[in-house]
Image 1 (cartoon, rainbow, N blue to C red):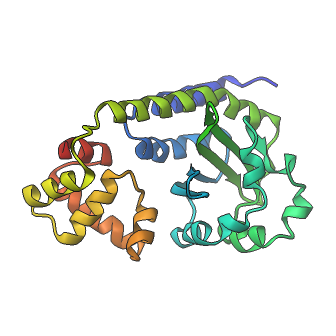
Image 2: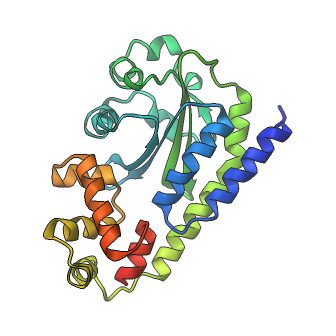
Length: 252
């Protein structure tokens, strides 16, 4: 099956966005909307696999409820009947390729998690660098749409090398610019005293410098995602930056 001229134009737009960013979180966040447009889809989520902890974290998502994502991170990822199988594949895979719809629809995962936000037809792409899982794309359509066909697999597989290269470049750049002698605690203290951050803002700044997303920070500090985002907004206002990458540079 061929990619249409219109799809190819949208594909190029997504590729451009991937290579514009020097911060992985910002890259995943800004590619979500254009990727849904490319795929004719409604819902997007992307997580990082933490092998040492045996769990997914650092979620970026679009058109899904904060609380439902929190339930996934806390509960449903450990009762997820499809993602482990999807992660074993190195190519884009539609959900029905690894589990028939009638089987999935009988699960707690489908009825109490996916349907809560309206996710019905899905396709995933799990990314690897050598043997390391470096992230994923989880794309879903609502029930009123048709399911994905083979052309969706082709589109995501066209994107795969660009995604892997973009993530590799960002992580390599972060390593090159990370002074080994300066700890994250040192950086957050610098920000605290230079920009008069509160104790809570300094604590959240330290976690931001550690690469934690809003949802992970909320979980670690036992506060709401909304509260985290309010603190992040205050931190950016006080320091005069607009994203995590700039905050990292400022701290260094």
